[in-house]
Length: 342
Image 1 (cartoon, rainbow, N blue to C red):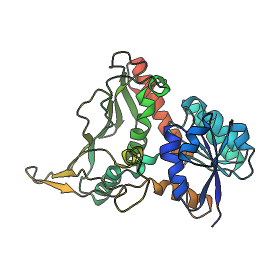
Image 2: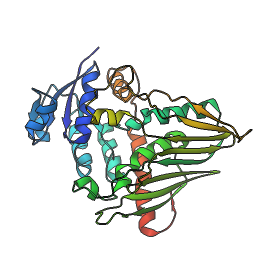
Image 3: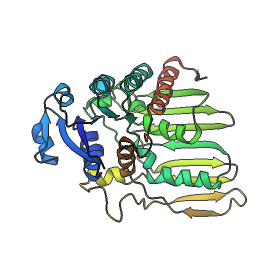
Image 4: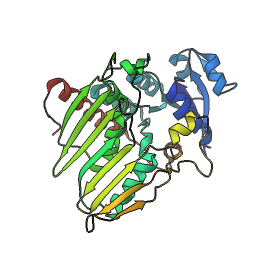
């Protein structure tokens, strides 16, 4: 087993919650340095960690093999390409880039240098999504005709943070998760129709979206609102064999935000059960046990791939496909029409 030195760019929510704790738990990975202007903040969570002032200093370190790009969106392409050109493998947080053109340029840099480039799409390992994949694999739902995926919240007052004002708003914040899951299940859609809006007073960017992915004989509806006091619905999936309705959100992010560490017997166990209604007898509804969610699986798969024991868990071409849908959604909302992806 070869130990892989890791450098982390950024120590905001993503770096602090989704990256550093999981790197620490992956035996083949060793976090060597963090780029941050707030040394005290890094040391509060990572005592004794080397903190460097800029990306160039991180990339000059010979003990760093893999760079995690968790900087603000506008720097993702710049930082990823710089790291790839410096001979590092790269993980990029979502959104992968701010345009499909930048995403393609990142992939070209990876190919030119023979380095691995992956997107951090952790919600492929959510408990509810893994449960849905199991149901589809078992054939219980039959042919899916209507897929509805929600990521709603109750945050009626906009926060004074850059993420609230990003171009595209919540479509580029939460949308990448929902788009990636839909593409994992159904592949590339034929077209996209999107409505993005800022519904909270004073919201600097869209905080609501309703996006339809068009497939032959199927529609995938992706929705998010920050004005949903009741934000319990996560999935509503209807097929020729029946329906599955799932409330609740995967517990891993809330657990880490509450101070928990990944791991333990209850890690990733979603206590909120969805229900399946059989099309053969719609009067009956049965609970569906949840799979165990586990974001550690992404990191272990990445470490295995870097050690030649597996494949890239989220290849760059899949991240580009997500960016193309996100970009089409932006164009659809701006132009008020359906955008073809064919």
